[in-house]
Length: 179
Image (cartoon, rainbow, N blue to C red; front, side, top):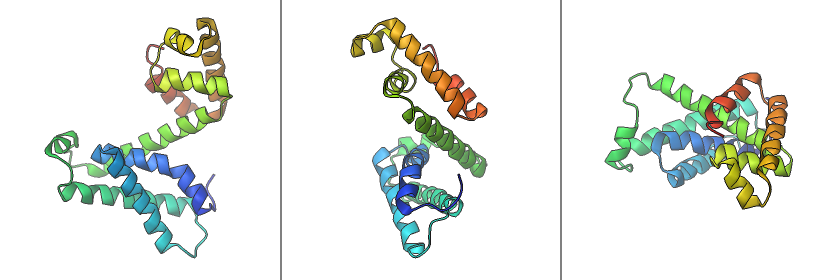
């Protein structure tokens, strides 16, 4: 998957992941979006004439977003309650790596769900990402509970084929819950 990307493809692929990554630091979605947009603008200014290489671009963007988040926090734009949310662990880099991994895994799961057929995608989203129960989904969509269960099984089968085994395992552990 690594290689040359257009700026638009880069934005489409990494915007949501980077917003989630930034949100993990600052817990303010609007500020996270602003920081990510600034990161893309900074990338474009620095690499305006270059054809974007995905690996270098991704590294630049994650580092730029991380530094902007830390600057945002340092300048006191986050209320005191957010300071207590931040992990005061001195091993900040290990914490940052975990946040990058979480953002990447979540991005891969979301991307895989978006490739499912419409009925599977909608039911999977409602169940695994919104936490709705089978009966609630059936009621909202006007279908039987058995149809919901069948579509969820079909979705899991397709996701197993589309995701790396490690990511599929994380999907099962993190998003399945009592559904």
